[in-house]
Amino acid sequence: MKYSEFETRRADPADAEAIALAHVDSIRSIGPRFYPPNVVDDWAAGLTAAVYVNAMDTGEVFFLATGDLAGERAVLGFASDYILEGSQHGTSVYVRGIAARRGIGSVLLRLAEAHAVARGATTIQVEASLAGVEFYKANGFVEIGPGETRLISGRPIACVFMRKALT
Figure 1 (cartoon, rainbow, N blue to C red):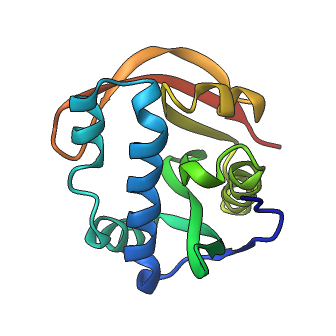
Figure 2: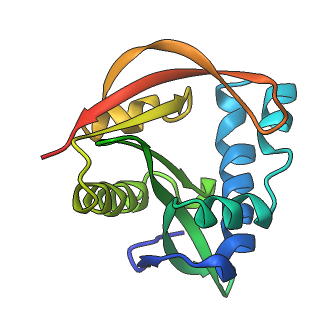
């Protein structure tokens, strides 16, 4: 399937369910190449619309890529921008497995970065899943070091801390 035609826009709370579906699809379709089944299950657990509505309510901004999926308009991927501290922002990018490696994630990341710059960010950081490390490297991030982060369940997942200077 080609995704040469997709649209991007800023998300609002009405998009939360569609974001959750795209997020879980990305984890379940791409994650198993990098993590064992129990970690993939933990990673996807608890990703409900409320997670994204709550994030929006606390200042996180989401950008969506929408396109045709089995004859229906759907969220193909998303990126977010949130303030960590001062001029340091955080981001994350997820794309459905069927839409991966078609430039959608890079376009979404650029939207999140531009938004961060507009809000005064000088750096943007990510706790990259093992599945996302090469994507973030290709988009100018440098590795700070390996580590782990906590999932919604409270369980740990291996990640790589990465950072990019914004201009």
